Length: 222
Image (cartoon, rainbow, N blue to C red; front, side, top):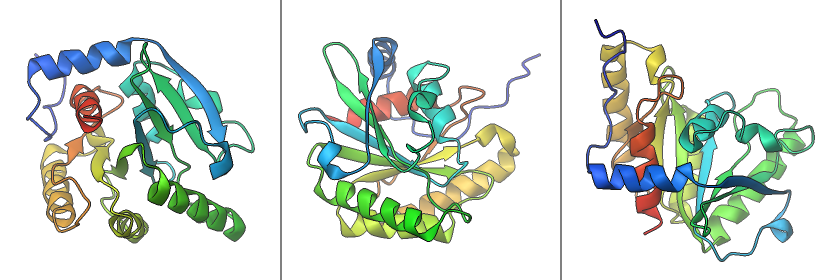
C-alpha cells in the first residue's frame, strides 16, 4: 500500500528532459555568496536572478533547502542582524543563476522601522534589478492569500516584475482543501498583470512539486 499522498495540483507543462536538466543544475555546486543590507552591497548584475518572497513562517527556508537538495543551505545566512537583508546563493559551475532569499514579510511583532527598511530595500531591488528574471511568491496553502500578500502583488504589478505563486506545505491539508485553495489562488493571480498564470504546489517535507519548481526556475531564466 502506498502511504504517500497523491501529488498536488501543479504545472504539468514540463517534460522529463526539462525535469532532468533542471535536476542536474541544482545537483551541482551551490554556495552562499553574500548578504546585502542595501543596494550598494548587491553583487554584480551579470547573472540571472530568481527571488523568493513570502510571509514569515511560510516555509521559505525549507523550500530553498528542498529545491537545492541541501539540508541547511538557507540557514547559512540566517544569523542575528541579517534577517532584513537580501541573501544571494550561486547555482552551478559554470555559474548558471543566483537565488535571492528575501526577508519574510508580515510579521506582526516586527518593529515599524524594520518593516520600513524591508519595504525600501525590496521595493528598490524589485524595481531596479535588471537581471531579476522572476520573483517566486510563496503562499502557505493552509492559509491562502492574505492582504499582506496582495500588497506584495501590487508592488510587483506596479514594478512590472514577473512573479509566480508557489503554494507551500501542501502535505498539511486534505486533498480536497488543496484543490479549493489551488483554484482560488489561480483565479486571483490570473487577474494580475505581472503574475504567471500557473501556480505550483509544493511540499518541502514530502518532496512534492520540487522537481517541477526546479524546471520552472530554469525555464524562467531563458
